[in-house]
Image 1 (tube, rainbow, N blue to C red):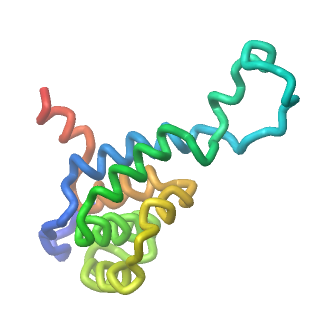
Image 2: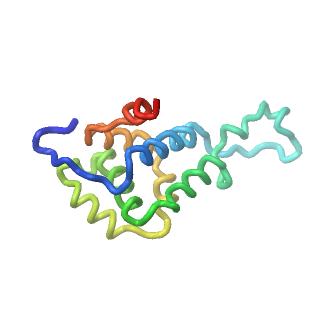
Length: 143
């Protein structure tokens, strides 16, 4: 939770953007690794299990990739730094260090890096909580 010693930090990425990624990451995280099915079978024979499998051409993954790739570099850097804060690599008081390390590691594969983190939604949600923000507040603001 945010303390009196935690500075009020302005992020380049908005809470709304982070919440969108949290929502989409949850949809992606519930999927299982692909199974090898009978190539002669069809969806109804397989009880549509393939819908719950994570595949390279997964529409949710593509949506996350498109969204992250449309962000500017500063927003992507903040998103990675927030992920690291939520994962516990840094705390919010070390925001400048987290951001500097994320900037040094930044490349064109930010979306793929984030999609490779199995608990991305939890990391981002924990970081927002640490910053005194939440997706619930974002939803209320849109009502």
